Length: 396
Image (cartoon, rainbow, N blue to C red):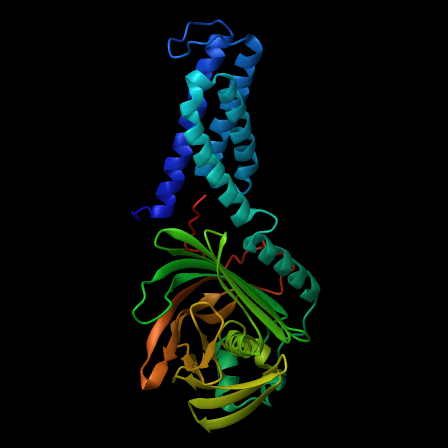
């Protein structure tokens, strides 16, 4: 059995506290309707006020249950519960003022709920942008044939055959779910995360990645956006406190490397006809020079005896500072393994992101590909080819 995380524990404790708070409101209803004398309430409560206590209590119980169940828009009910509860408490202030503490806790939870899932949240922006990108890139796709592989280096062509690209439609877009852990440096603590990603290919390629991470028990939202010649990265703690707000040519160049990496690992079919100049090094190594978004970057790809890609190494990516304001060129690699059949393709499902500072190296990212879908028009459509690992956690 998986141990509950701090975020899960906070959510449950808060939800149960709000439910109990709502049930206590029934005392005001009992007194107001004259069903019984409540010793804890010295002041008189009218039937009308008793009805208000009942409504506030019902809203609070509902809000607590929805919070525990991680309902998407629970905070709408939570906000109504906090306001209505505080109003009836003020009407019986001398007897019920202690309940204000719970309403403050509920209000904090509501504010976080709005910040993390409301219309101006990073999660909402990701979903809006991703839905638009998928809708714009959907449609019929040509089937890949052996002729399409003729211009590719032998190791790359063999990799595409091994990946099951021949006979399948070309990839115009993808949507993937991953989970894993990440850290800010070799001596920094690991943070668990779940992530969702959308890529579109062809003219004006896009890459959108939303990460829900946990740092010291607190939620951290990370949103990467890449669209042609511009890229941004925003990080917020508790969905409220800005930690990183990065943009500029260095970040765009780094994200261009990531886009090429995604093509090679998640959608190798996109290498057909891509703006890549190939150089064969030997039977197991090729160099690809990719141009996108006004940047030209290169990477060395390594293949094993099974014609599977096992590593991707580039010297054109930049390591960001903790605040995302400065970038330092540094070798970057993504060793991958765990090949399995997903969405009718053979893909690597396990990998790392590694930095190589000053001749050394360390993993800053460990990821597992849970699910992927190709050429989809919907952000909510899932592939039936993979079973997602139920690791997603939310604070509220």
